[in-house]
Length: 174
Image (cartoon, rainbow, N blue to C red; front, side, top):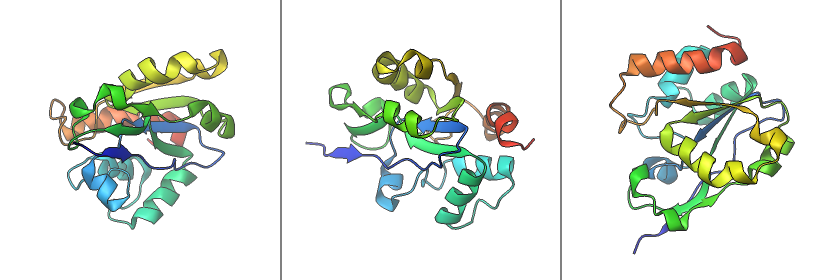
């Protein structure tokens, strides 16, 4: 029997303009209680390059820098059963999503949602979007290549360029 995985609280300031959504933290992230903690996940190296900070900074310092750039982090799922870390192993009948109506009400400046991979976007479309008010449902959404090491279809350079295109006009960096 697999135990249920519970995600993290959002990392957000009320002035956030961009919300980056994953599906559910993987096992390395859950163990370390840090977003994107797997050493081969490209998330922090990509964000550090785009936003101009050292990816090796302490986790709390990285979160602070991302927040100052008006970026919020969270996951679509609040809870699920998933043996291992692969999104394909998530047991659909166990999915519980986060409360995005409340979250977006507290962060009214969010004008773009960026999905870290197809699975997060699919869970959003199936489990969140139908319950949102029309004004919240119309926030611009972009699906980006997953930064997970399991997503090998794109090179790191391809991922970097896709993330650059989605973030830099709202975060003030090229």
